[in-house]
Image 1: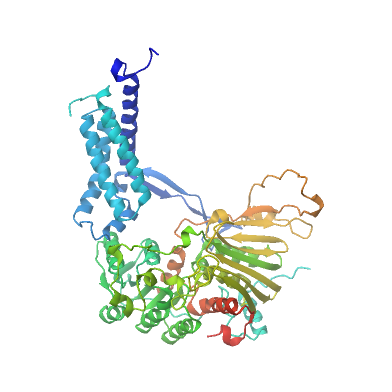
Image 2: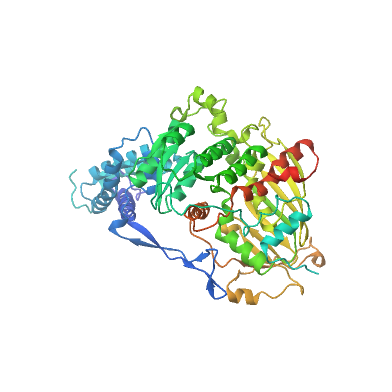
Length: 174
Length: 460
């Protein structure tokens, strides 16, 4: 079994690959989530024509079209925002600030993780961000979301554990 | 021979109703014959905005708010709820949407005495509060949108109709399917306009809800943040938090599943058939939830005499299984059957095979219907006798849908009526005529006897 790859024998290719995969996954996850904060929809609905005239009952056909624009930005989705507003433990001043910062934070962290800029610190900050999201979801009893974020946290910890095997990084310090 | 349907919905309803000496009960069941409505052209505050109060901001109140937020021209002036948690949640959501903090109240009397310039109230409180709250708001000069079921007793529902007619204000009841474009198209264009069903002989509908979705709310330990003090609960008719959270399972507070879930769908029987039933037979029991006051499973049959002939309509509400497509209504005729639901994917139109059924090619060409791909034909099997089987019906669909929350069109209709630009699709009198038979399902099930409806059963 001379091909067995363990840290002990110095052959760490598997660990390098593992680190790279986690890095790309977490980076893409953060980056695209940040981009999605700028997504909106345009209604493409058309009133259905029946017997040559638009129907009076209001039946429509078609659907919505997705597009991206700065004016679409919502850090916290509208539906969740209104729920958080009603939470007694949610500080009123913090929510608008969090709403403004969440999208840009995800974009910046996505880029730094993907490029390997201050990789470990970026992962740590991303973990803190996910903890803050977890707290919010606990407040509004979104247990499924909490579980999802728990999985993300495990992946971040794994990525930190594999950080010594991180390669192709622009800034290895921090 | 198929009897053609009367294309005039007003005559259809009135004739069937008069023939059964149930005047006043069935005459207004059809959409095209709403009550005399008096709507304001200008709001109480003298502006274009309609100033509204949200009465009740629990789960259903939040559902309605998520529709109201999409309707332009509304000013959320006040919110009333006995629960501090709900009240804070409602104020927060309005504030988040409009950047204007609404005034909050625990007591509706205080709200009505304090708030000036209100135009309308949207009521989403427990059923046993619907009637008192609606009557108070109407008498305070407000138009009212109130959730169904109108009330927990038929007498309380009668009071709502009387108050609407006494005050001349608008009162829409939340049978939201009445404003759903898919239901309206089906009723106006397919059943009445083109008579695609032929003679409707049977109807059936169901709401099958899983055991998991039917459990008590709150569980063994209720979160501190949502607890309402006992003295407040007692003042507003609740014995404890369990009653407050689970009022639907208590006889003094609601009509139970047949009323809570069945009201929407039995309303469709009465609307589409254009008349009130003449009889109900029901059976029910506490098959699983042994300690609940209301039956957890109810099955009932309504007998109708329509201008086309007799119709039997079966309805079941199950709180122990979701099997069988969940919830839908279906109307089965000699030429076609329509299964319709708020969920478009569950809906379909089935054309019978046979020479007695007209060709639907022209209907498809004109856009009334869309042909769906035929389902795969089952393989012949040894345990089936081919000569016993009917040919599978062709499957069609409506030519479109709508892209809004389910309750929004009904609320839009209400506010259009408040502005004097529409007639209500389900005012309190029409809702009463449709709901009245439902109040007699539980008595029939309890006594295990059919009830033949007389004027006093169904009239205001």
